View (cartoon, one colour):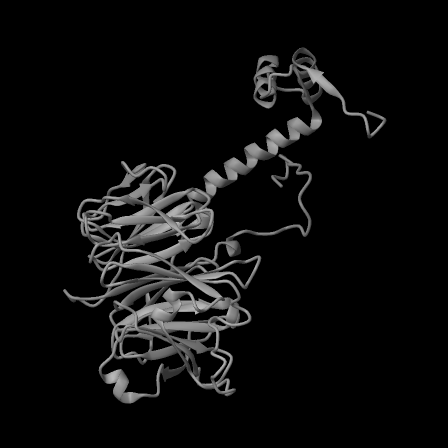
Length: 447
């Protein structure tokens, strides 16, 4: 239209006639079918915006389908030289500094640079006698307040400051009823004061500390305490339960009835704490926060023989579980009766699962050291890699995929191995700086 504010609409007959005429190929019936696809509301007419939106959506979907079937190429498995003497319990990535942190059972903290060279190692506590009788069970990063939290078999969680040299301990949470063996930390990307530290213990309890003023202080310092900010503040779990710390409150449940809680995570899109055990009753428990945010509503999945681990994909709304019965199951969080998909292919129990979120794919790793990559949509295994780890019957394995850098870390007892993804962008030749609008082919010169 000469007037840009005016939108032109076309009826089905006019669209079929004009398109055949202008484009110069294709049958009128095909344009009729295209019209029907664009005119979803059955209004009998379409405009230019509707047509272009439909074409763009089709191309996005086609692109997503292509991505989902792309199989990543990996460099050779590489063992990273480290100094851990005992089992590596956790690996985390610090977005603020670009470093990776590893912690092992004996309390040694490893700091790795972005180039994956070990920069330094330091004992998490300077009390040597304490480390003789203690194990570290887990580590999480509190990104919004530049701290890390470390759980010990002494039924305590210590909070260390990453901004100070030597990482001094700022808070020590004592008096927990059971040994915490898994932890998870979430902070609100829109309000850094809101955050949740959830943890599971060996008595089957899942508990969460909900912080409401994290940037000011995680816990309230008693008025009588000395002004020395460097001194470690000791908090008793009973104090938190009684509610005398106004900047945080506690949520929890005991639905796992004495089974070790193997993994726990809080998910904001579900507003629920997900936890799992190796038991076949209440294997995966979803604890949904109610409107008041102070109470939990519980639903649970029973999975034969239990699971080692799980992962949740918020865009697909799927929970993947690593089954001891060699199966990877996909669950809708709202449907507890049966899984929406089962991925067969492993010949040993599955010990880890993690979504490759961008591509709608899923990694799984089994006890016989086989890594598989699955296409979720078609529920097919698209890649199988047998990892050449040392032969050992009894081993503890840790699995961590860093999607941003295409790095897959697998720890084998005290050794850390890396599978790095080959970068795909290098294969493409870019001929133009701006989007390409026209291509001509010369058949004579074949150019």
